[in-house]
Image 1 (cartoon, rainbow, N blue to C red):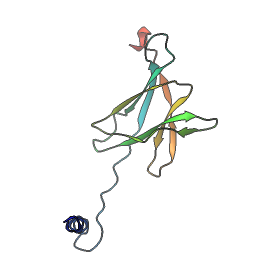
Image 2 (cartoon, one colour; image 1 turned 45 degrees about the vertical axis):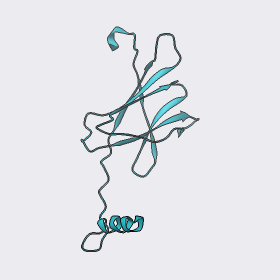
Image 3 (cartoon, rainbow, N blue to C red; image 1 turned 30 degrees about the vertical axis):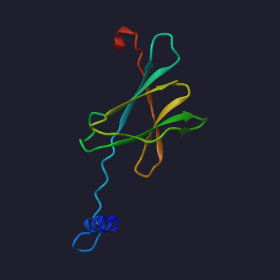
Image 4 (tube, rainbow, N blue to C red; image 1 turned 90 degrees about the horizontal axis):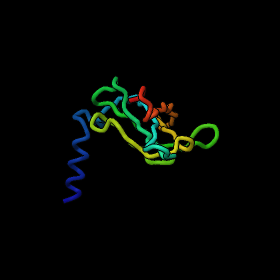
Length: 125
């Protein structure tokens, strides 16, 4: 039975011309990253990554949590995917050790600048 289902799946991927039909990749979106204190007088902060408003409904962004390691950063966490149904992710982090890495289509990572939000300053409310 499982061979039959595998055959049906394979046949559904082939067009009448015999070429394999692949869906185009989803458009990549940019992200913004902010860091703010988790609570007063704490060294742990909230690292929030959000899709930018200009992201199309079918767009995605792949991001990773990175760790500073001299020049450049190295990824330490799994790749997370942000979509229209999951536009934000929040990580607890210490900003002097952590950064956000945006993953390109080729798999190369780029550092996302962190914007500090002073959670208890009136102008940041």
